[in-house]
Image 1 (cartoon, rainbow, N blue to C red):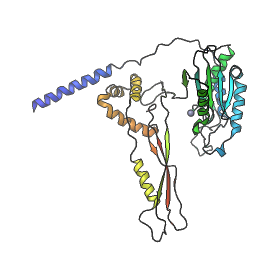
Image 2 (cartoon, helix red, strand yellow):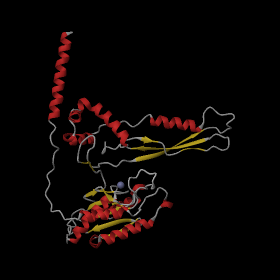
Image 3 (tube, protein in one colour):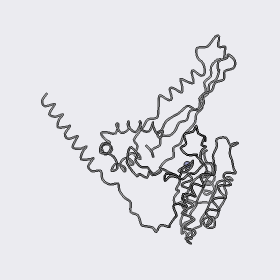
Length: 366
Ligand SMILES: [Zn+2]
């Protein structure tokens, strides 16, 4: 008995020593070698005012094409041309899919493959009014408390205005790129993006093989639970989803002689079963890299867990699962969209229909 206790004690001490040693080895994140570039000067107040103005154009993408308001896109693009004249003089602009803009700034060296910078003009709808959760009106573009408020400030007018500000200043300074720069501003990214797809097909048909394509990604976060930050999260995958329609059929009848199984009952059981089986949460190599990169910024306990995933992996995975559920960043499925069955007079529904959306697990955020 004594020996077992002794052996157990030794194992525990060795285990603690290994864990503490590995934790102590966590150093500063690796830095890449970079060459300093001379930054062009930008007036931050003016740039903020421009983003604020861009937010005020209600370039909303709608699921129903009948609700689409083309005038907002025409107005935004007129404003872009007026606000960034040097850029539009330097590039050749082609309209693709009517409202998507493909701007090509020809480089001097044709042997270099172009870089494609992407951003989108559209935003998802935002319900307005006192009853909504918006702290500031979504299309006001208000500048308050050191922030620019509104729909699209981050997704994705911030990126588009950032590109335009930089490129306009460069063009004004007389800069001539050696490598061709392509700026692709789609107009319907939020509803499957036929604009961006057609731009890609056009470039492909012209035999263009981009050197790099840079699109919207993560953002710089501070004070997140996993790292105090600031952390610039790099988006390496797009969170995709598929929507499935579940249909249940049952015999019609009369509510005075109800059948044992109704279509809505069957459908509800199916939806409950799907909800009870969420996707498996895994710590894949991308997530592991992210955890390790932010480890130096984490609390001692998190650092210890992250640097000893061989021991604490399941615990880290469980914590992330909880966090991801809360923030809706994880892979999940979700069936609230529609639950429809027709009740005709006293006849119970013979057909029930539900829409389930399955989101792919997203490795970049959690
Ligand atoms: Zn976006």
